Each structure stands twice: as structure tokens, then as C-alpha cells.
Length: 248
Ligand SMILES: Nc1ncnc2c1ncn2[C@@H]1O[C@H](COP(=O)(O)OP(=O)(O)OP(=O)(O)O)[C@@H](O)[C@H]1O
Ligand SMILES: [Mg+2]
Image (cartoon, rainbow, N blue to C red; front, side):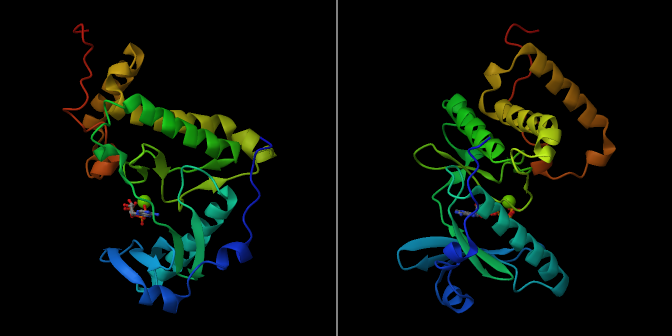
């Protein structure tokens, strides 16, 4: 509990964040620019380091308002976590609509060629990131989908996208109050990843609960139009054999 890091100061991070003009002149790659509601993403080649910039400045006025709030929130989240393993280093806020973070060499964990063979190690890596988050009173809330959990070539798990996170003083009343819910959320997240990474290690009880979930999903018409991301890995049909090897 006492391990919480002090948030970085605004001055410290602002010192290395590029200005908008610098950022616009240093764009090396456009990672994404066509999505209506999401930020544009750019890779910046600044002297000495590569950064990813998340930028809402070219969006419609109402997306810019939401984007501005999202950028402010995500900057606060990075500052709260400080210098932590398992997340990219925060560079700083560029202006109201954009922030810069270290570019990490990662791929989505779901696409890792060794996601089964080294599944237990990946799961342990993600478990330890979640533990670090908890020790800082931090809850990511968007790790059940596949898009925010990445892996470096050396096998280290890296978590992206802190826009949906919440956090509390880890020794405070609110964290103590919500701790059971937070722990349940973490267990749930890890269970989802366990299904994908180490399906053979599922207990009979876990297989039964997945089967129940799938049956419910078939009749749950609200969920019909859910995105693939909402349903994975429950919809990873070939990857996960829910029957017990003995036929149970
Ligand atoms: N620091 C980074 N280093 C490398 N790639 C990154 C970095 N930040 C983001 N990306 C890439 O951009 C993608 C989207 O980033 P992020 O999740 O932060 O934005 P988003 O608007 O929430 O997008 P999505 O809705 O796809 O999750 C990531 O899945 C990753 O591929
Ligand atoms: Mg994301």
C-alpha cells in the first residue's frame, strides 16, 4: 500500500513533450486517422526518441470536447502511475487535444505466435501488471478486450490506453470500500485471458462456467450486435475446447 508512487509533476513531463508545431513537423507514420470517434494516432520521430501521439484536434467539435476530456484524464492516469513497468513511458501533454507517450515495440498478445506455448508466462506477466496497478489504487477497466494488451519481443507484457481507468488513494477509504469489486474485476479479466492463453489449465468449474456463459450468449439478444472484441475469446471457437479431455 505504501508503495504508491508520487505523481510526476506537470513541469517534469512538459519539458520533453513536443509543441504542436514540432509534433506536426516530425510525424513519421500515421498509425490511424480515419476513425470518426477515436483519436488520430501518429508516430513521431523526435531527436533521441520515438513517440506515439494521440490527437483529437482534427475531429468534429463535439468529439473534440470529449477528446479533450479523454486526453486530460489519460494524462492524469499516466502521471498517477509514474514510472511503472508494463506501461509506456508518458512523455507529456502537447496541448488540450493531444498527448505523447513513448513508442513501444509491441504486438497484440492475441497474435503472439507463442501465446499457447508460453501462455502461463504471459498470464503471469499480466497478473503482475494488474498487481502493480492495484498497489497504486489503479484500475484499468479496459483489459478484457484484446486491443490494449500487448507484448514486447522480449516477452514483457505492456498495457496501453489508460483512457478508461479510475484510481483511488491506495490507503484511502474509497479504495478499501471498492477493493472487493476491483479484485473481482481483475479476476474476471484474468479469467478471460486464461481462456485464451492457457485453455488446458482451466479447471472443471471454469469450463462449466464458460459453457454456461456461452449458452447465455446464444439467447442474449442484446448482445447480438456486440463487436467481436466484446465477445472474444468466448468466440475463439477453435482455440478453446470446452469439453474436458476425458469427454466430460
Ligand atoms: N505507445 C504505443 N506504442 C506502440 N503502439 C501504440 C502505442 N499507443 C498506441 N499504440 C497502437 O495504437 C493502438 C490504439 O491505441 P489506444 O488503445 O491507446 O487508442 P484507442 O483510441 O483506445 O484505440 P482502440 O479503440 O483501437 O483501442 C494500439 O492498439 C496500438 O496498436
Ligand atoms: Mg484502446
